[in-house]
Amino acid sequence: MRDQPIRETAVRDTPVQDQPIAGFYKEIELPRDFAVFIPPLFVMDDTPILSLEYHDVLELGFCQKGNGIFVVGHKIMPFSGGDISIISPGELHLAQSRRGTTSVWTFLFLDLEHLLLSHFPEMADFDIHTYSGEDFRNIISPEEHGELTQIVSTMLNEAEYKKPRYKTMILTKLVAMAIGLERDFPNTSSHTANIASHRSIGRVKKALEFITQNYYEPIKINELAELCNMSSRNFARRFFEAMKRSAHEYIADTRIAMACGHLLRSDAPVSYVADQCGFFSISSFNRTFKEKMGMSPREWRKQRDTEGNTKGE
Image 1 (cartoon, rainbow, N blue to C red):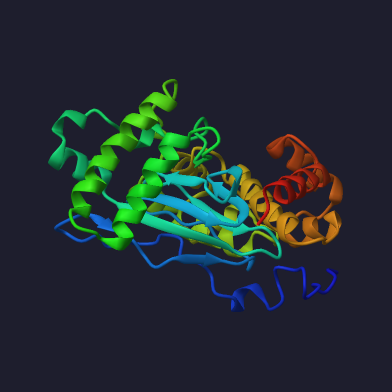
Image 2 (cartoon, helix red, strand yellow; image 1 turned 90 degrees about the vertical axis):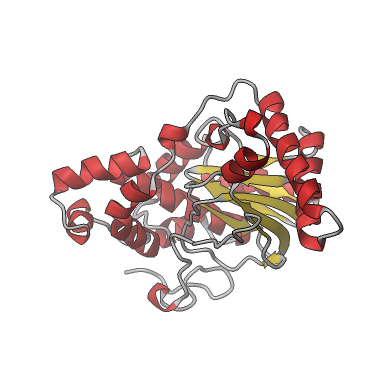
């Protein structure tokens, strides 16, 4: 039988089914005359994030302060103040602040393809999906790519304050960003085929939502297939088509992503984190964590704590 959660450290202070679950697909409505939208400043405390989301538009972000982790697919990347994020359409993602801290982000959503083709037809061969997938680091630091982070932060500033001719400034910065990505990441290959399409995701959406809401419990593949009104064999094929990995692997990736959030924001014992994230033995958790993250949970926590203390809040 599971221990009762510790209020100051646990994800589940109340039953998970009673907590608000972030929408799996988050629709972003862009203005028709200029396909750019900037929401209010996003203040992110260390409240647990319980699911991944994706959009059908490009998401750019600038971290004004704070630190934590960004999960994109099953990549888990630390962020800190001054970093930018580039999330291509269709990429599953979430962000989580380090425990006891608050992060402040500015985000910008835009239809990059439409804007570039409408105003700069010579940029027709630029594919934002190139900068996604396993080989691309979605969090970019000013220490490594100062010019690129400055371009994106300036673009977000123009969108927020709307000074005279801000649309022209945004367009010129978009071109500069596209060229900057090509120059700073010349060996990145196109991952368009690895980005889940809305249609393929739609076929297994109920299974994905079930996993994000029940990752801490045993999950049977045949039950996921039933949710999607498919045979187990057809479900396995459709799931891999949508997510480029098996359902078993996706469940493990989700559990590890959530475990990283626990380790980052609490001092709870590793055995407790394992239990809360669906691992029913510490050995299984340690083995899976090392396979995915390249080190043990204790080593990962220590490394992130050191990075957080070095960079500051």
